[in-house]
Image (cartoon, rainbow, N blue to C red):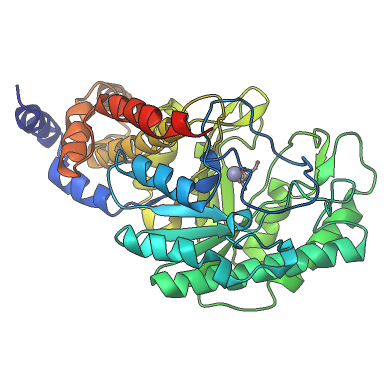
Length: 419
Ligand code: RNT
Ligand code: ZN
């Protein structure tokens, strides 16, 4: 049976439930996900520095051949994009500045160091870029604190850095003619009990007020704030908690960034979406996978991933949600990691668009709850694979597992040749 015949069969089955698969595929084409640069080199970046320090996050694993410069990283992600259907965005951290061998401090970054990225984004037929200040792995994380530090010099250093990053993000957004999301995440916190929580939070609030004093046009640059429950070395206390940033974002109309790996193991991001969107202008999703205490495994096609997109789709809220990937696995082929996480995310978005929401809503409104559960369960074995395969074929990317041999070829020809 051809791909097309499989698709036609699936289309008829969905049509019986009132779902138009052609329309779902058209809608999927407009959904952009932001592919994160930091999977390509384990989050190291290109900074020239005297001293390496580790604070906040850490990638583990020794898979050979990680990208060592802009050209290699661009080549690798371009390869990954050949295996991911659709046109997307690329998410840069400020440490991916290309300074041409010059040592540039984090509070001295300028747009010009990102021109190579902007030129590449234009070449890659109109992909967008997102941005992030890099507030970790730095000597100025004094005692583990940055924007919340009790030391005003430390705070000011990071305020300057973050203000510059907003400026750079705005310029990138204007150059590319599309929105650039600037997401702020800091690792400030404490390994053990902290008795000074309120003062640290007051400091962070004041730093953010200073950072956001400059207003930008939201069609080019939008700010997001990313909370976290705990991290490596901040097991007992994190300054930028959910409640802290939720309150700040609500008061100041910022995006709240929900990372799937930043909550208690049984606390689900999918459960938060309808509450937050009742009050907020929008949210940024960091699509990730928590495993026990760790937050950043390659995204798999899980119930939670699917439920997140079902929630968004049922609320018709896709226009209010920016979708970004966030994981880093240094133990497997990094191009493969990107492809797996991105394809799973897009697959989950597609399945959300294929849900017979009308039928479900009708059953619920009429109090016919066995039918509601019945449809929900039957949906789990509908032939969405045939629709997904058709989409990959339409977009000219490998169908099903065919991308794996392409990845292996790239490993042999490029990745393993890097010393
Ligand atoms: C860390 C946060 C954050 C980072 C990136 C690199 O826990 O999730 O989003 O992963 O900024
Ligand atoms: Zn994140």
